[in-house]
Amino acid sequence: MTTKQAATGSLIGLALGDALGFPTEFADVPTILAKFGPWREMELPGKGQGKGIAYITDDTQMTLALARGVRGCQERGVADSERFAALVRREFVEWYHSPENNRAPGNTCLRACRLLDGDRPWQEASQTGSKGCGANMRVAPIGIVPGLSEEQRAGAAQLQSALTHGHPTALAASDLTARAVYLLAQGVDPTGLVGHLRSYAYENRSRYHERWLGDLWTHAQDPSARHFIERGWDECLAVLERLDAVQRTADPELDPCTYTGDGWIAEEALATGLLCFLLFPEDPLTALRRAACTRGDSDSLACLAGAFAGAHLGAAAWPREWTTRIEHRDELLAFGALWDA
Image (cartoon, rainbow, N blue to C red; front, side, top):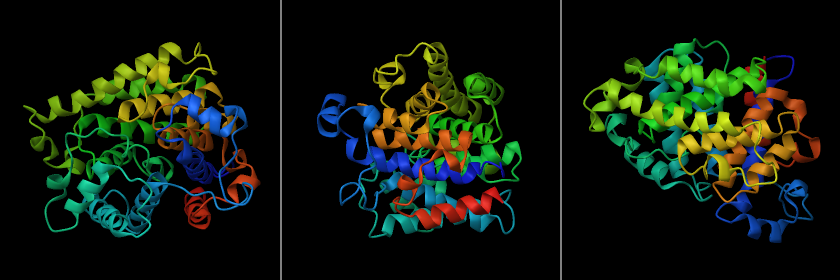
C-alpha cells in the first residue's frame, strides 16, 4: 500500500468523482450530454473556465467525518467498538450542524443525525428501514486504514452504516464496499474482484457482529439477529450475481445503471459503482466520467468508482490539474499520508 499510495489515491478519487457527479445528479443521460457534451470528455467543474475550486457534496463531507472519527480511535485502536461509535457519532452530529451541510444531503442522514444529537443509544437513532447509499458512499476510510483485523474492518464498516442507515442491506453493502477498497489496495486483480466479494458475502452471510451492533436487530422486526443480517447479505449477493454476469459483456457506451440499477439504494450503488470501475480498471478518469454520466445517483456512483480506482492504481492515477482544485484537498491528502505511511 505504501508504494502506490493507495489510501491517498482512494480518498482523492472519491472526492473527484463526487465533484464530477455533483452537477449531473438528478439528471438523465440525454440532459447530461446536452449540457456537458460527450461523456468521455467531461471536465472537472469549477468557476473560471473550469479552473476554480471543484466543489464536493455531502458524500465527501461524510467521508471526512468518518475519517476524523477513525483517526481519533487510532490512539487506542479501532478495536474499541464503543469508542469508535462515540467518536464517529460526534463527527456525524458536527456535520449535521455545520453551515457547510448544504450540498443536498440525504434525508436518512439528516433524520438519524438529528436523533444522534442527544443521549439516546445510537441504535434508537438508526433508520433501520433505510438502505439508501448514504452509508456505503462514505465507508472507504475503513477499507484503507491499516492494522485492522478482518473482524474489526467488517464490524467498523457495518457500525458506521448503522449509525444512520440500519437496514441490513446497508450494513452488508458497506462491509462489501470497504472490503473491495481493501482488496484493491492490497493488489487484488480487478478481474477477480467480484468473485472475491461473492465468496466473502457467502462466508459472512449469517454472521451478526453483536460486539459492534449491539441490539440493533431488535429495532427491525426480525425474529432473530441471524434472520436480520441474512436479509441484507442475500440482497447484496443477488446484485453481485447480476454484476458478475455482465461485467465482461456490458457495453461501455450504455448507461451502467441499465445493468445493475440506479444506485439510490445501497446494493445497487455498490454494484454500479463497481461496474463503472471494472469497465475501465486502468483508465480511472474514464471510469469517473462513465459513473458521472448516468441516470442514477451520479455523484455517489462516481464517488465509489473513484474510491475503487484510486485504491487499485494509487495516487498517481489522478492528474495534478484535477487534484489541485478539489475542495478539502489538504485534509484528504493528510489522511492519505497518515494511512499510507
